[in-house]
Length: 365
Ligand code: TXA
Ligand code: MG
Image 1 (cartoon, rainbow, N blue to C red):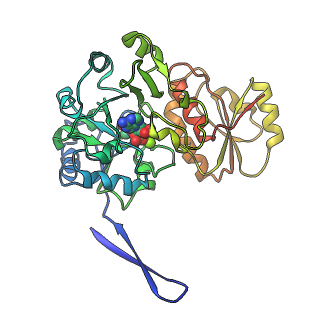
Image 2: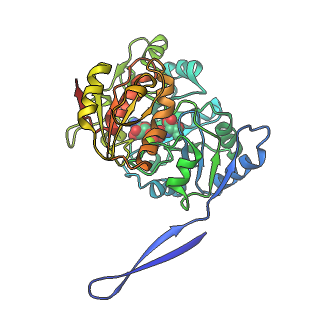
Image 3: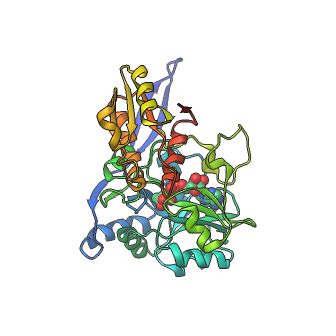
């Protein structure tokens, strides 16, 4: 670890010194725990020592630290530039790690764990004393998830501790779905980036709160409302999922307050049939204008564009979305017109991320 001093003279010619902590980052590949044992060992060792690791999961890459070590967790907030009042998800490798983290396991949580874990589902439960307040951002609850990607679980198991891991992007940027995205955002800030290839799901886990009377979805993901209802009966969707919050509004999930998933370009959603969308885009032709559309639209586009996949393939939209937003930034996009995706299955999550990236700008054609 090296500390670099960057000096900048102030107006009265005194030297103001900012301490910038730069750490050596390594990049290793790990796809199969049975083969990539060395990489998994390295990652686990860093976590045990209180360091930070960017690791793959089936949803998006996470920036991981020992969830029981407040100082290590503070490092996550610093590396991401994350607001302190936005709590973290604690990741476990095995079900017996759950009980010590929570005040109790309600029958609904038991049922959800049996149905969807390991997998892209996060549950909000009353926390135990073991959870540092840095993880829960002072709330009385904790978010817990057991990822399904074998490499992620192998690292957590080898570390022997539950692992706090928000998405491995700089705060406000699109979540990373490849190791290269982690390199862009976190090089010099984490000890290790574990390259497990592209994330299969591509959008973050479904977050469901079990702390109120009716289970409530705080963030849609690959586990759909219909799937949750099959296990839980009635499930509500938090109003903040699709609507713009007033300044100072009470939120169930602090993450909802923040502008999220956003590329540098301005994003606008276009809702309408193919003809109306193409007519609209024809009038928008300008330098730096791009479209994010479906495979079927590509041949008709009057502006430069990218395909999220066939219109009916919501899984493909999810898998490609964040990578494409980053790619369009790289391509110099100033404005991105995204065609509103179908909201069925994981499509609801894709729409939720897009409307947030768009700052709720949606044009109905
Ligand atoms: O798929 C995922 O969930 C990824 C991968 C790495 O596992 N992680 C992830 O973490 O998306 P993050 O920090 O980017 O998103 C966590 C969301 C935030 O919106 C946060 O506010 C919310 O979960 N959250 C965490 N703890 C909470 C709590 N106790 N109550 C309400 N919301 C909570
Ligand atoms: Mg995030």
